[in-house]
Length: 112
Image 1: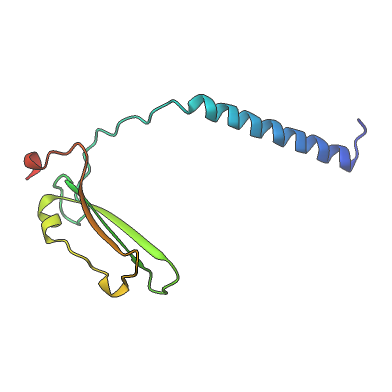
Image 2 (image 1 turned 135 degrees about the vertical axis):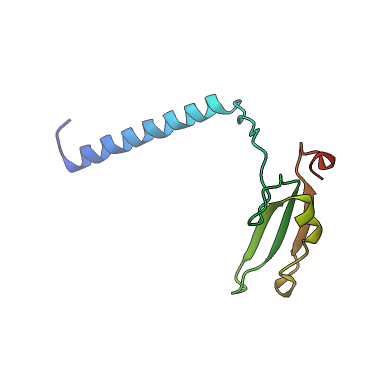
């Protein structure tokens, strides 16, 4: 094949296609792999608190500009979860959310 602009572009397209096919094949091989468990217990999100986190606290509200939603999640210990409450009610909208959920695998009795 002569060394022309069109032949170089054709070779580049073929190489890109081969790379994409290889990436897809590798992803298919890894589809059954599981993520390694994270055995490190999370600490409370609050500054200065080194207690283990027991709850996940999530709040979804409109950002200051009103153009989109913001979702923030913090992992908190039992004491800080008790003191937690909605902080952005002034920016609540139809899909506003304030949710407290226990962290799976954490026994609240052990950390309390």
